[in-house]
Amino acid sequence: MPKDYIVRLVFCRHHRSFVLLKGPAREVIGGITYRPFFSQRFGEITFCAVSANEQVRGYGTRMMNHLKEHCLREEGLSHFLTYADNNAVGYFAKQGFSKDISMEKGRWKEYIKDYDGGTLMECAMDEALPHTRLPAMVRVQQDFVDQQVRKISNSHVVHDGLAFGDPVRPVPIREVPGVLQAGWKEEDSLPRYRLVTAAGVVAPAAGPLKAFMQRVLQGVMENVDSWPFKEPVDSKEVPDYYDIVKDPVDLSLIAQRLASGTYYAQLDIFAADFKRMFDNCCLYNAPDTIYSKCARRLESFFEHMIMSGVSFT
Image (tube, rainbow, N blue to C red; front, side):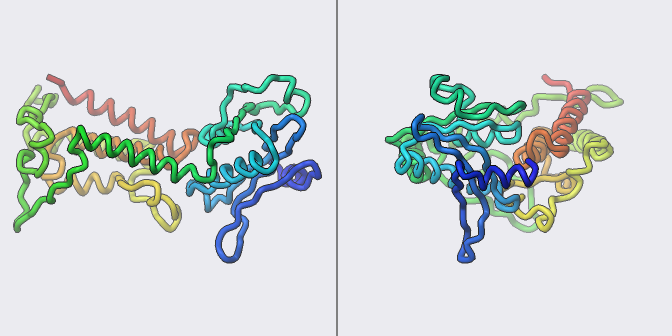
């Protein structure tokens, strides 16, 4: 939105604004401007924003929950309407807004302005729902579900870690604590594929397997879409990246693991690192960004290289 248009929205005498203040300095890091229609018991959200360096930290959700609680308890509103652009539809959906409008048209049609290119979304507020205590309520529900799962599963049991001597040696899967208890069988570790090489179709022994993975990695590195993945993300340039991505993977790390000669004992482990790298990118970046587009194109290229060099049994 142009700045002068935002100013008109925020300072319009018919509108009210709800702001989020942070820290002792009470810095404004977000706000929502809305217009209440008291006779119709709904409000129209006309502007919603959070500072760029404070996004993806839950402030938008907290702000919306407090606004719902205030408007429901103090102003008697039961619904919110908003016209969301393509970048905001996902945010409003997470806040309980839906594209299905339940209010009868006569209640809102002549009250709010239509916007071309926007998606009309509605949120119905429940008087029985404590909007500002939702996180605590969800935690109680999660604890209950976890307790029920523990009755039928051993997934919560934590086994001792592996003890390595010097020199470090590969550990057979059967010796990893907890693997046998989880139902693993020896045949589960047998490769279900064969490698297609210049000499013909061969078993995935250590030598041919490493050579094949090196070819795949080299092909990915030379692809035009690989540039965002060649080095780890710089935390100085992207401060919150490692708050969101807990298991980062990049091509330089994959190259180090492949060079060790022992990390990628199976092709599945090699492929899992690539999938995690692509998924991490799409987790942090919006679908329409150049980074997510590179990730999906490079993922298709990677899968093609794998499928062209492997014969599944």
